[in-house]
Amino acid sequence: MADISNHYNSLGMMADITSALAAVGVIICSCVAETDRGKGIGVVLFHIEANLESLVGASSRIDMILGVLGWSTGCSWSENKQFLEC
Image (tube, rainbow, N blue to C red; front, side):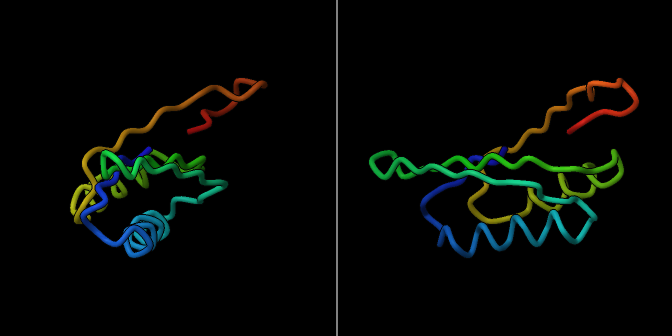
């Protein structure tokens, strides 16, 4: 999930975020975004597939994108418990 600031072109920011994720091998399965024009902020939620190394690389890249105020990830076990879904 990325919290984004409205001070930056949101279309450019979305392109920057998705490019940063793709550059380190993170697969974007789905994405949803919402903005609060009154507060001038937005939130983007990605469902992704990645290994730990890719997530570390993505974190350092996304932290450098102008307008990204915060970002976090979470994982869940698959039904057969053979791998984590992040």
